[in-house]
Image (cartoon, rainbow, N blue to C red; front, top):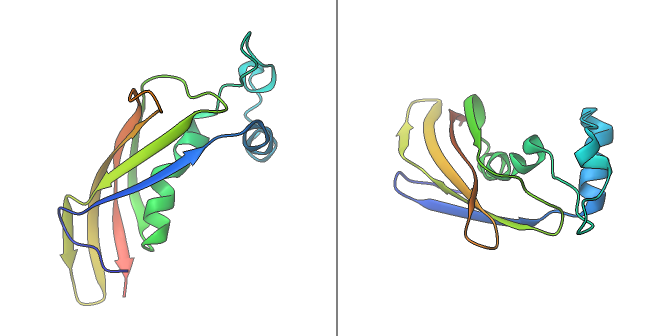
Length: 125
């Protein structure tokens, strides 16, 4: 896939109870809020599980991340659908690689921003 500066890439995902349970096992992040449902029957999704949305976009384009910055703004719950928008702010083709910088914003189904940040890295050619 070819990407260019100024391009916006989106990805959307709904987080399930099974996602949170598996991530708890893999990561060891077993805070009680990830294991016991709230009064509405929801679990809190791990912040780093939510952060897989922008990393998935980077992975789709073979980005080897060199820097990642995350600001977790509000909780994400199981059943939430999160939309991630990544904007390519810098893309510089070099001889054997391309350098990339991209800020991102993730919002829930209510339009509330839950996560923002940026990543930068290289794409080997």
